Image (cartoon, rainbow, N blue to C red; front, side):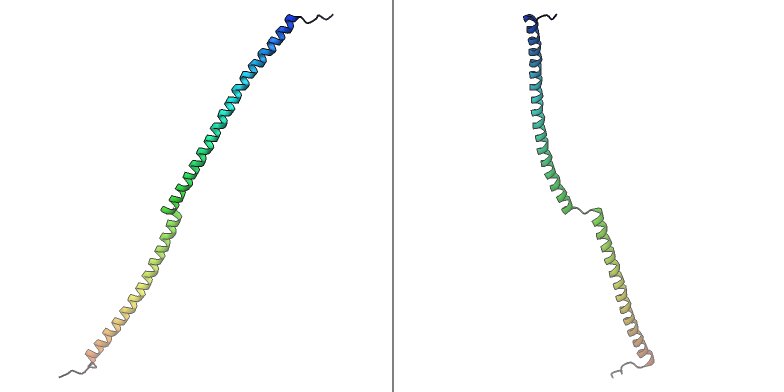
Length: 123
């Protein structure tokens, strides 16, 4: 035997369903507000990241144009050292040639003076 559903039981079920729907409506509204806030926060964060990325790129360009890196500094020092060494070798060779020339002339002058082969004396 089944008992018929009474109006009071039906009212209680409708009341409970209404309360559940009401709570769900409030919770859903709060969830939507949090989603909107999070979305705006994410958009703001993206715009800040883009701005900072632009500033960082400009700074990196400034540093690359203004300052020398360790590698390029080392290369420049190596090039300068090689150039100075090459100039030193060239200068030593030039000095040796001048020394040889001067010593040859001194030797010829000594030969003329001591051997009497120098130019005649004017009287």
